[in-house]
Amino acid sequence: MDYPKELDIISIVGPTASGKTSLAVALAYELGTEIISADSRQVYRRMDLGTGKDLADYKINGTTVPYHLIDTEEPGTKYNLYRYQQDFFETLGAMRSRGLRPVVCGGTGLYLESIVRGYNLSHVPQNPALRQSLEGLSLDELTARLAALKAQAGTALHNHTDVDSCKRAIRAIEIEDYNLRRPVGEREFPALPALNIGLTLPREERRARISARLRSRLEAGMLDEVRALLAEGIAPDDLIYYGLEYKFLTLHLIGRLTYEEMVAQLETAIHQFAKRQMTWFRGMERRGCTIHWIDALRPMEEKVATALELFRSTQSSTL
Image 1 (tube, one colour):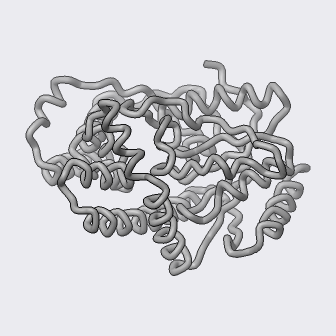
Image 2 (cartoon, one colour):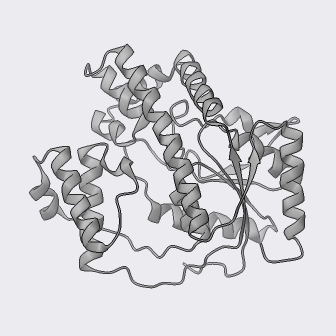
């Protein structure tokens, strides 16, 4: 694929429940542009409540702001960062051919950073022999094996969702093993000049929003959503692989957690996830990405005005 050489984006980042989608939609509406999602789970069809798609939020003043990289994959499949980069640049190229500068919105910091910093990736194929050798190992044993490989590679175990199930841990080991044996080759993949806008919330407000949203989604039928996916024939392990809501609701539906245990453990896991998101975004700043932070508690009109001012201030210079 020939990647465009001169592209720029506006990104909206922040922890879960900070109001990223609403701000992205309002900003895209004002700029007459479209949104590209940077969420690792919203690519899956029929996984709506659990991934927080909130598609109704894309409607503003009687208009639906177009969005991309949402509802592109079937549940049970394994989408990954390599695929995201391919899909992102294909979408971005099509938008730029129409004269559009996209607003990128999502909470998967790795996806966003891979775009703005130009990660070099290659496709990692499955290794049946390695997988067979890992079968039967406990999650603790797999985690230790992964940590050892990362230490050998000089990296750290930052993303703990890699080890929240045996299946994910085995895939993470497979990738680390592949990269150790065959270093990732250089290829043309440009870092994108970006205006990064972040939404920040006080810790207690963030926790309150997360708890309220979880209960709202449970009342809206999130358990039925997961039950329907299982009824389609999607294996429980495949849903558990997606983590968070799909992990804990599936564990409840297959009888391994009571309803009360499911809610309590899921709520704790989402709070921990939001904290890891902010840790990732702060890490992006340390790694050279400038993020302009806006108080998420400000009125929407003020947040949009601030974002537009930031955008206009970059018009005459490289973002």
